[in-house]
Length: 183
Image (cartoon, helix red, strand yellow):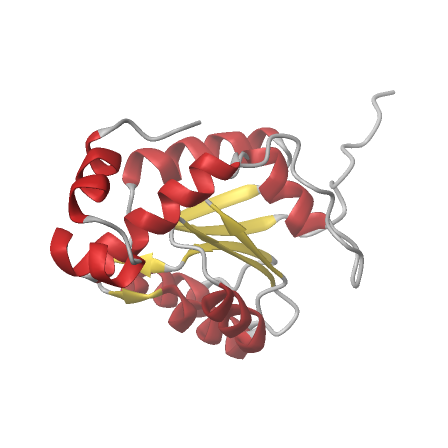
């Protein structure tokens, strides 16, 4: 007699929403190995359609999508399935967006790059439990680099404006942007 799968009796449907097709496909395969039944979407429109057609038990949603904001998908999921456990995943982490995500119904907020184990742990964490700290957190250099990149993007890739907002010399900023991203 074989032992039942650990999540066999539980609804393990999962909606993965990210406009980076290779990333979302890799994540779908990784989550499938962890017992989930993933469905993917690459836009707000497709995700809202999937959320209303087959409301999943779990969802991982990128904050910035090509056709809008991932929080629209969170709201649609809350309407179609209030008990859905939602994790917002983004490469542009900020306190304001984390608060907004939790206010509309996300249970956790993870910064990219997050691995499949971190995502699965966040989805399966018991209600009110604090998530485990990540095994490989971003280094201070990486956090600084991510912040500079975010401000640079918000300034429409204008180096002078970015340097002014960061209170940094323009040449120093150019040198930082020319280097590879730290690990």
